[in-house]
Image (cartoon, rainbow, N blue to C red):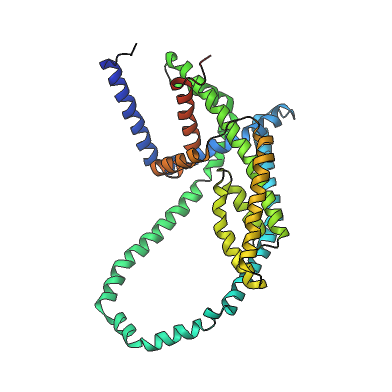
Length: 357
């Protein structure tokens, strides 16, 4: 039998919708304040398994000390990566600069660029002087200068925000210090009769988040390493930097295909420097994309992800776009858990794919 919608239920639904809109508005309004906190929660979620391992497997009894050791270990790994990656990248930047200079000087349509600019200025000298003395130029200057100062002020505000965001580390430390308490007692913000509902949803969300974040991060790491090796073998410009970029982009599945755009530009520079055919160089790069994608889809992803069902890339991209438009950068951070929460609710209570225990 169809369930009747009473006036009481209608009022509660309208109130819940108004509450959700109010939370979104307040979150967007306080985004500059909440951003370090959300980033800290994300880092704490990723770092907690290491802290737990250090505390219980390595028998470091003091949680604060285990957190410090974990943070130092992560910083050491990042430092080693910087040490081994940045110097080769500087060499590749120099090679890229030499490729670009070679292309600018050797390409026929740019040989006389300076001469053409000089000749154009000489031919239009009268018109140029008239423009700078005209009222139009003064009006343009008068309207542009406030915008310039606004940009400078906005830049200073951004720098201030970056400096203030250092408090993220402090947030993360205190979150990790009481991680079990915070993750197990947040349910108490709801009335007792509603807690089983939210507890079941939380189990589904945690499972899906673990499947995606940890699994897809390993897949992206493997893909980045393969691209770094492949581009280095091909002696491709910016091989390491391009491989790292592709690995980071693959945190969202198949987003790395957009890296074909800078790859085409780098292939053009390599062809201009070596005299090779552009389509041959770019074709080899595309072939590398195809080979790595096949290896990833047929070997890496099944081994790492197992039978876990990840989010569809189209749904993930849509969620990033929607939540980013609603809440800005905070929306990009919380897009994955919020989308997972909505999907888990739909599967458990609408389509009944996961029956409540």
